[in-house]
Image (cartoon, rainbow, N blue to C red):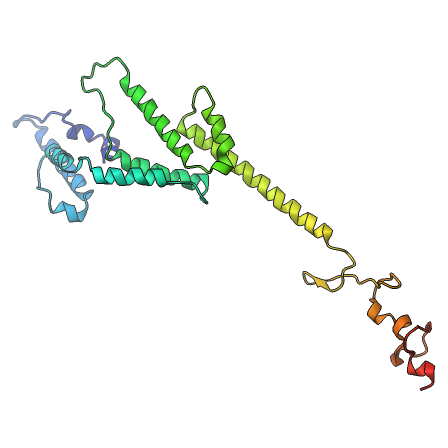
Length: 261
C-alpha cells in the first residue's frame, strides 16, 4: 500500500507531512477530495471479512494510524511457525531457483512480524542501520547455504565460506545457479556417452530383431551370413523345393530327390 501511495505521490497525506489547510482556504475542498479518495483506497485493500470491524473514519491519516495499531502487532506463534518452516526448508529435489523462491517467501512473511530497530533521533552518525542490514544479509546467506544438499554442493559451499569477504545473498544465488547448470550439462554428456557405449557393445551379428530393426545373422559353421546353423542345408540336407540347383551333399539326411525316394 505504501508503494502504491508513493507511486501516486499521495503518501505525504498519510504521514502528515502535508498540513491541512485552514477552513477559509480555497485549497480545502481539493484536500478533502484527495482525502476521500485515499480513504476508499485503504478500505478496498482490506479483506472484506475484516472491513466490517473497522470503524469508518473520514480522515485518511486517522484511518491509517488506527489500522496500523490494530494489525501491526507481533504474533509470536506465527513467528515460531515461520522459523520452523525456515529450518525445515531444504532444496532436496527442487531446482536452485525453486528452492530460493520458497525460502524467500518465508523471509518476507517473517519480515512482516519481525522489525529490526531503527534510530528514531534522526541525527545518528554511527551507521548502526548499515551494520544491522549487513548482519541480516549474512544471516540469510547462512540459512540459504544450510538448506543445500551436502553431497552435491558441499564443495561450492565450502569455497564460499572460506572466502575472507562473504558474497551477498544474490551473488551466492547466482553462483549456485551457474553450478547447477554446469552439473546439468555434465550429466547430459554422461548419459549420451553411456548410450553410445551400450550401442557399441551390441554385436553386429546377433540374431533376431533389436529395437524393431532386422539384424544380420551369421552361421556358426560356415561363418557366412544369411542363415544360421539350424538351416544350413549342407548339414541337414536339401529340401525338395531346392530343385535342380547346384548343391553339395551334406552330412545330414539327404533330400528325397537325391535318395531316389
